[in-house]
Structure formats: structure tokens, C-alpha cells
Length: 335
Image (cartoon, rainbow, N blue to C red; front, side, top):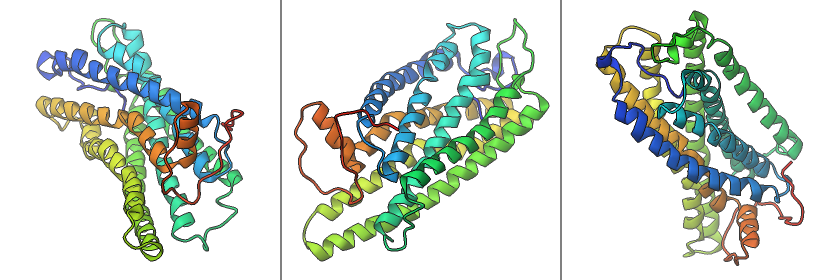
């Protein structure tokens, strides 16, 4: 997978990205995302500890929460390294480990959004055709374990194959730390992850358009003139909006950027431009950890009820999904 801190390979000054952008602007933006993401995801983790895993929907949401929290924990090392406060050993650690963990959890989150869409589609649009066994808590946990295992299989070789020696005088580049096989696996894993993103994106569009149509038709039949259908549709499309804002821009530039890092067909200026675009769009992807809580709040009634109960705020009655689970706030129930 593409490392968080990859830069153009050349070490000449004309090929280096602007120092102010790399060491000041980007670390500042990541610091803001880190602070907000840490607070929100810490709260999410705490709230979900009191929601029992008695529905597949809840199991998948909890996996997204875990992935987001692990992703947030990689930010400080990137911030310190990019800001120039760490030594080269820290930069090597970022390239070899924390950057890989970042991408591992980003794509785990993407996959669970797709699985969540599939789960909602069959429970709302095709409830009679849904398989009760496949949508049981046991199978949802099994699917979750398979997702983590598959992404670990794709990601761990990027740690192992980032093993080349580095000099103490030149600035370390993540691409330079990869062996020849590492560069090939790096490119292959990129294409696999892009394929995962494209598949999930199109499935989400199909699933949630169908879900919104079903909800709208149901409310039109039951209560013509009510705005409940519009509210449900708006809440469902919030997932697509977050997905589009956070992940689409980065994936549009990922293939050309990866080619620029693993080949010699790009000029210095093109490599720098692709680096800037990659970093800005990657920041949008990182900001996903701040936007996922919005999805939990609007799409998951137990999350909202537990949050309000813990904060001693009265929850306003409103239309929610039929497949919500009951809430137990007396004991932690994360597993």
C-alpha cells in the first residue's frame, strides 16, 4: 500500500516538495484532525461498549469504530516525522509500520461500509429473501474476522519488504526503503485496494438508492405528506456523501501517484504536483475518522439513545430504521 510519507525519489532541491507545505501546513492540518478524531472516536468507543452486539448491524459498526481508533493512533508519528521533530529512525518506522497500519484500517473501514450497505439492503429492501443465518451475529463476526485477515494478508508484506538500508545524510524516502519485490508488492497491493474501493463504491450506490426508494415508497403508502421518508433518505445518503468526500478524490489520484513512485516516466515537476494532490486528498481520507460519528448518530438509534442517556439529554422521538437493536446501558457490551 502507498505509504503516508512517500515523496519524489530524487534528492535534488528542485525535486523536493515545498518545505513549508510538508513541515508546517500538512502537520498542522493532521494535528487538528487528530485532536477531533481522538475525542470523537474515544467517545464512540465508550458508547459502543454499552450497546450489546445483538444485531449484525451493530457488529459491523463496532468494527468501523475499532478501525477508526487504530487509524487515529497513527497520526502522531506522521505529524512528528513530517514536522521534522523526529530523527530518521522515526521516519523509517512511519514508512515501515504506522503508514501501513493507517492504510490497513482505512480500507477495513471502506469494506465494512460496503458490508453495512449489503446488510441494510437485505433487511430493508428484501427482508423475505434475507438469509437469517448469514445475517446472524455469529456470521457477522465471522465475516468481520475474514475482512481483518484478508487486509492483514495484503498489508503485512509491505512491512516486511520495506527493509532496505538507508543513509544518515540524505532524507529517507519510503520508496527507497522498499526492496525490488517490495516495490512490486506495493504496486500490486495498490491495485487490489483500488479494486476494493471501486467495488464498494458502486455497491453502495446501488444499495442505498434502492433503500431510499423503498423507504420513500413505504412512507408514501402509510402516511402521505409526511416528511419522515425524506428524513430517512437524507440519513441514508449521508453515508454516500461522507464516502464521496473522503475517499473518491484520493482514489482518483492514487494510480498515477503510485506509478510516479515506482517508475521513472514522470518528470520532477509532475512528481511534485502528484505528491501535493495525494497529500491533500489523503488528508480528506484521514478526516473520515471525524465524519463517521455523524453516520453513527443518524443511522444507529441505540448509539443515539445511549449517548443521550449518558449525557442525560432527552432524545427526541423520530423515525429510525426498523432493524435497530435494544439498548442496555448497565454493563459494557462491546464484544
